[in-house]
Length: 302
Image (cartoon, rainbow, N blue to C red; front, side):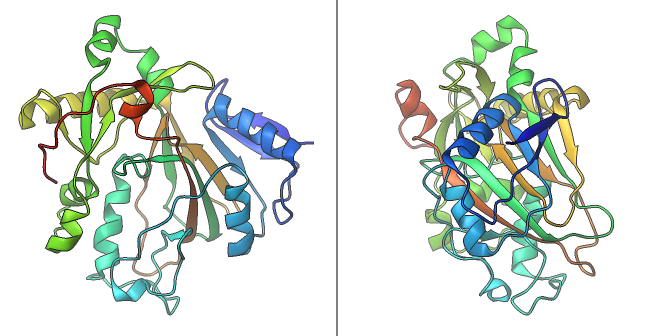
């Protein structure tokens, strides 16, 4: 039987009493899923997972999201179709070089974001597993977008209702100065519409749906969209809405992308090892489609 040790009343909890080397029982899956709906971020420490076991754990909670191939030859061989490598290591197991394309791409992980919001069908839950960690730095911070929504003035909530933002992976990468995408890659990164406020169907709660991938908001100018995005990100990442996770080797952290943002904190990525991999389950569909909101005609480019 699992036990929960909450970080706060409703956001973040550590899970005790589960060994995920064995396929989780239906009872364990149901208990963990219920805890995830309440706390949005779960930490399951002390796991010893092979890549196969890692995938199997995530698959017990829903269909897995296929991952894009790594950017840069230095990453070939790390991760697979359903495990994305978010380490700072090359295929040879050494820290990447300063000019590594993978380093340029992953620097955007230090921005507040939501996994795969730039895809037609975004991510539901992420399962990030730590194989090795640096001695200092490299925390992951999480923001509770449900509580952030609840704390907005009613007038702002009314204004946000039904608003559509345009998400693209290229947008978040450009925010860090990375521009190393070719025309074919950019074409595959065409902006995807997602609602700025969404409803979590299992609980009925409403939540902001934000990410640094947002490059435009329907009906607003570029400057206006940036102003709104900056306002909402600043509001949603106030201390009272944020949990900062200090990693331990063997931690499996699960979070609900529908109602959280997260970001990586800096560490010495040129000299230390931070080896983490992520499996991700798919949401039920695009947020506009799920709420019955008519999508706008494509207009924004990454």
